[in-house]
Image (cartoon, rainbow, N blue to C red; front, side):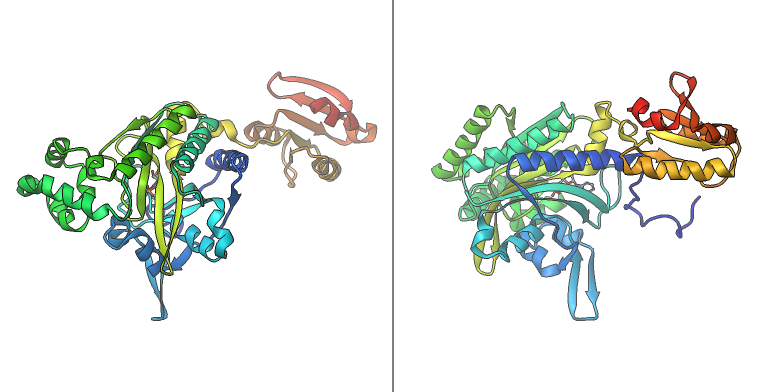
Length: 415
Ligand code: AMP
């Protein structure tokens, strides 16, 4: 077994070939889709003040209570590795003054949660997310969901399921919570320990408890929207109407909560059947985040990239399909040919061809094996005879055909 010296920390992993080529493809596709919706990229620091997350996400949330990697810097600063991207994005937006409040941004990068590592749960994972500021209305919520579904389609996913719900407004949150407590009160003793604790602090979370006895109690509760104002119910209807207009398939799930305090109105989750127990690919919602006594309103989502890779595999799309391959592998027989091949490769690379070669003299057999492993479609073979004639042997590896051609003709033939 490999030692601690060469392995990354548990729950974190190195990302390299062949996965990395798939990730690069996913990221460039995302950048393309986001730009079509008029979004710009933001890269915020990975480390932020602990208070930013406590204030934005809420101090009773699982993430803040149990899952943050926080370090004490010289006894002066409490710094947290970001567990999600929205809090930092909103901090950035708030630093832009009035202009920030109409920004449309996206981010791609690592997030950190001190969870017990298991299938689909990492301590370092990656999210691609978007935040649309300004326009706090149902149309913006529908646009955000439609953009996300479009992105998942461009990535090649066909078996995603969109579930939506509403949390009502921040102002009516207490009324909704009280309505739920009243409805749950007769069954309090049958709730699991966690839910008994949530009952006072964060009663909405009882709705998505995985404990079977809690689920039975929850199934008999009235729909949460019945505790909300007419305006909130109309807002939610408008979101649904717009999704239909934009051709986005969805289902309403009245038990969908989303863990964080900052959500209001529309929340959603997108799942995929290839994911197993942790079947959420992505979550999103409208939010109101307090910054310096004001509230910043936006709507956004975050997609878990490790889970996207799993879902893609479930649909037969594998990292190997994206592996980078050289166009041509140059095999050198002798020192003079090696140096000449390096000169040729340098020129072809400047012209846009991907070339591979070994800079140590090896046997022809060893070089041909390496060419095969590299996945190159073509091999150029040169020794002293070919050099003196300005020629080479050009071999097509898949067809197995080989012929003598002028070295200058190779780029044209390959293309
Ligand atoms: P959340 O902000 O918790 O809703 O996370 C959004 C998405 O990020 C989830 O739907 C997952 O796809 C992904 N995600 C969240 N936590 C983890 C984790 N610990 N490991 C891997 N992916 C995660």
